Length: 264
Ligand SMILES: NC(=O)c1ccc[n+]([C@@H]2O[C@H](COP(=O)([O-])OP(=O)(O)OC[C@H]3O[C@@H](n4cnc5c(N)ncnc54)[C@H](OP(=O)(O)O)[C@@H]3O)[C@@H](O)[C@H]2O)c1
Image (cartoon, rainbow, N blue to C red):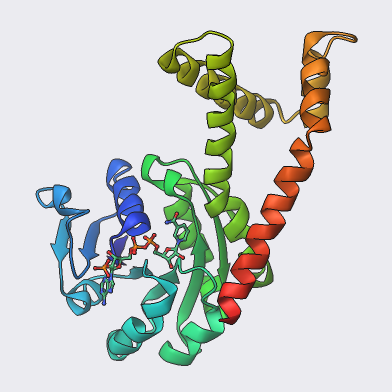
């Protein structure tokens, strides 16, 4: 697959890194005003680093726009004359709707909104996808690309804002939880490095256990909560401080903020 990424900042470069690591392309064009985040790939086979967005698009079948929401419309507008029905136009911009892209490139083009997270750089992203009618016809292509970089889920566009919070912001929420666990571990006497290692591997173990066994979360929790034991004591103390409520409230606050930003 011939892929172009327009905008190689935090997310664009993370996608590039994942694609390169997994050799998930036949050619890859990485285009930005300033390519410093991807210059490291300048000698990588079949990778072209450029400041020329048009060159990148003309060489590609799949074009991934990884630009800030405030400028994405202007940039697509500038390039719309060279976007053809053979392209699959993808956008990762939060809050930028399929209809807004269609207004610029036309409803006859294949458009797919993509919501990954930065774990895409190591092939472990959760990526939600949603397309217009033509985009849906090309959805298998999108799934093939992003399944190489983690796991995908096709969702209705009406759920894209929620997916932005759970997938994209979600990675920060999980990291903060791991961080809090390391603070607890240090409090109990572990060195910072030991605390990081223990917290991270335990977090990975919990996620892998649920993913690989498909067991219900509460069933797995029941396995480690001996009646009257230390685990249930800890869980109840955390819940008394509102752990689950705090998470749900954080998620809904993030969602409301995103909706407010979209309106503005
Ligand atoms: N970061 C995440 O975890 C994440 C997750 C999911 C979705 N998203 C979405 O991904 C999009 C990009 O986010 P980001 O964090 O990667 O932003 P970013 O780091 O600011 O990257 C955007 C890049 O596009 C460049 N750019 C600006 N104008 C351009 C043009 N005309 N042609 C080519 N490149 C141009 C910017 O250069 P300058 O800096 O020089 O302007 C910058 O390098 C956003 O819409 C965001 O909503 C981000």
